[in-house]
Each structure stands twice: as structure tokens, then as C-alpha cells.
Amino acid sequence: MGDFVESFLFVCALAMPLLVLSLLIRRFRKVDVSLLILYLGIYLGLSLAGDFVVGNHGGSDWRRQWCPKFLVEEYVSFSGRTKTSITTIGALFWPCLVLDRLIWHRTMEADV
Image (cartoon, rainbow, N blue to C red; front, side, top):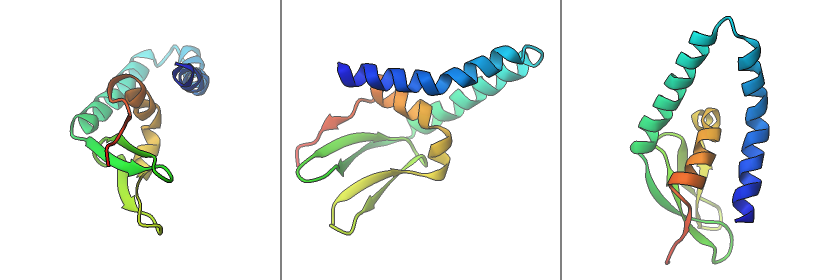
């Protein structure tokens, strides 16, 4: 439970400047809402096309992580372990990815 609270507070701290900025720009409120809906809609489509991937986080720590299509890629490290990495496009959607993994598609231990 502590990890969830820390992650949630971290996401809120990073999202706060965006919320304050959108409140300051009242003139373009319709544009802001439209862009937010478009942003969330694109992420939702990519998330629905994704799947769970088994990745190694060191030693015998294997986890099943949700990987939205085109946002997270799977690769093999020099040690021969399967890992995941956020792509450049995924960096634009990382707040959605973090919330998605915390709320909807939780990361689980994998039986390897």
C-alpha cells in the first residue's frame, strides 16, 4: 500500500504544474479539454492493443508488466535477461502508463 501512495503522490506532484497551467489559460479552455480528450483517447487505443510481457528486474525477480502497443518495448540485455523499456513515444504518455499500471493493469510476479 505504501508503494501505491508514494507513486500516486509522485504522479500528482508532476501533474500539478499542468493543472495550474490549464487553470491560468482560461481563454483556451475548449482547446485544452479537446487536447486532453484526444491525448487520453490515443493512450486508451494503444493500451487496448497492448499485452502483458514477462521481464526480469534483476536476479530471480521476474514480473509480468503491461506493455501498451508502441509505448513499451521488450529487449534482451547483455546478461541474456528479458527486460522492458519505454520508447520515445512512450515518454510522452508516461503519466498515463504509470496510472494504468497502478490502477488497471497491475504488475504481477511471473512464474518462470
